[in-house]
Length: 389
Image (cartoon, rainbow, N blue to C red; front, side, top):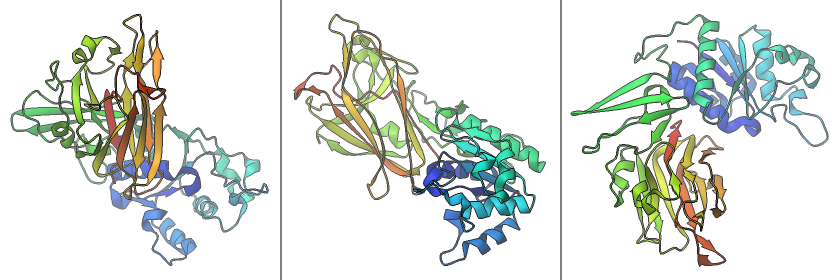
């Protein structure tokens, strides 16, 4: 089993370091990946702990974000301090001639030699990998894993194998439930969970820790909406805190939305939405069975089919932590157009290692206090989550 160390600065790349760690652990195994927040016992001298860890590990992954230097008021950066943990980790790897793979996140660039103390200048010349937090995350991670395998001389095993080296996170996973065969195929940065039109069967997360896509292209929805809860339940998602209380979370066919006038589907004719809200501000929360690192959802393309144009309500999606604390948010104002509004995909990422426990969706169809939007709540064409803790 390879032994990997992850070096990062919490104030710089906490969330991304967690996602990277989880993906590496899913591939190599939990015991193969060391990250300080999970592994350093309380009361321990971190320098001694790092020294001990370096003696038992094979490669260092250095996560570098835009604030990796540790900028502070007054001009002097934290990386210049001899006691800076990040500096200690990189110095020790260089001193031991340990392989180092710099990973650039959040649009960062490698530090210049002039930005670093003398003992770290060699680090600035290391060839770095870039990892994007969006759709290309899985593809970028797979490239990093391939590089680690090559550096350490490891061979990739056949799909479906576990142990020292597992299958690539972008492999195909076959899930069998009775007479139903569900296929989970990772496409780019996502896995596609496909349902048959028979009785719902539980769906597992793809092997290798891949993302799970909640989309209902094959769910048998006619012109009348159907309850979404049974299908969300298959993914370990519960619907809670409905406002108004008598409203419902449903799957609706595009045919049922003005017979398709106004919405141009991108991947599915079926949307997740909230109904029976009385055209007043409404909300609901999707709670995950266990916290996840990130949640991505898509609002479909909107187009004007009539002379009055098309409107979509103002909305806000808020990621919530285990204690209901707000971690991140995405939103749009009320949209009205006589042209086409392209589909948009939004991502919520955890800013702590506790992860996202739930996402609250708030919608408001009003303009100047009066109902205005044709659709009273946010339409979700696809929901993706991954990096479970």
